[in-house]
Image 1 (cartoon, one colour):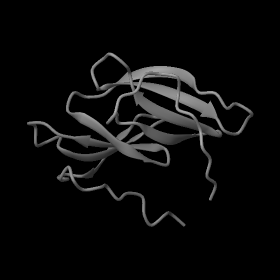
Image 2 (cartoon, one colour; image 1 turned 180 degrees about the vertical axis):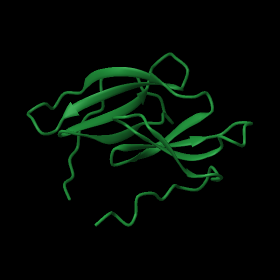
Image 3 (cartoon, one colour; image 1 turned 120 degrees about the vertical axis):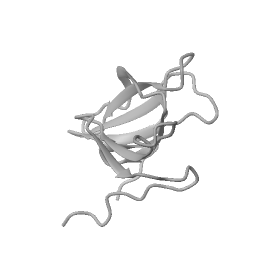
Length: 124
């Protein structure tokens, strides 16, 4: 297991911002950071090439999430999303692949205070 410390991208951040870091394959790391001065559901995606010599974060794109969605974190190549709102058909915890943006429901009901436990045990 390898640990490293990096500076966050050069953007304004606020206390309580939902930031998630995910692997993207090909030695790349993605960081999802709320875009400053916008709705909290618009995220800027930054990337860094860990396989090369790049130590700087580069802005890749801006994405918008559903109005009832919160980023809870990331596991491997997946964002962990929590959907709230009035529609019980959508409520629950989801994973979203950072490459394909494919959404998969993990559980139908998930109290906000709980943490999603996903992708264990690892495939052999």
